[in-house]
Image (tube, rainbow, N blue to C red; front, side, top):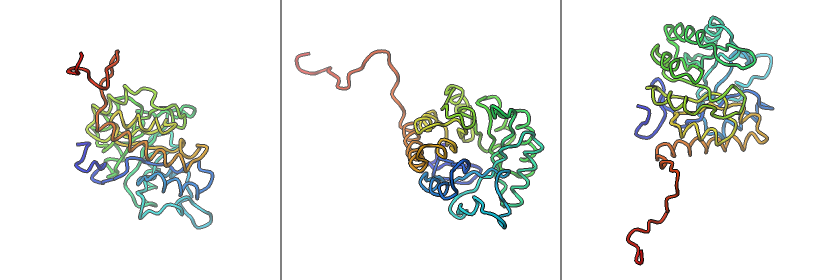
Length: 262
């Protein structure tokens, strides 16, 4: 069931109150990143394993700014272009960070950053067999999303638009189909540009939204982080409330049936 009695998000048996996941890349400083995470209200923080100083002995690392007692660290395999590379990176993250959760990315094209769907499926199969909790970044293809669910992914993460593009939800119909066909949480990953995009994703019935660039590269990142928090909350409430049907003609707000003189 996607909706819980208290409306918390549950993935692989773990409960989250916030439905906003936040990334850690592209901020001007680590301190700004830390403040943005706090203002967003997010509990899940993603970290690109290949782009982080995991040693932390000789230089500053973004991991020094994330309180792992407060936030759930979700390593990702960003920057991996083969399934073998993604699997190695996931194994490395488990060894160093001590978590078997991974946001799985296998990129198929350097310019578009679209996922390599065949490589993604292969990597997911290998990692699931090794006991990983795999959250795959995938295209907005309901067939692929279903296959990822069937092999054991406890959530699927379809893109709203290409990574970092800020184009918003380019094909809401595809996202809606994925939501309707999935028995696991659906998390929109990539493409969100502003608060209304996040709200739209939630109004479509998505269970969460992962956002990085739209916050980190906003003119005022801290203000945008707060805006995204409220947008996700509003979109979720609107979805649960149920929108009115769209009509071609007007419908009076105050019915006149039974009014004297009519």
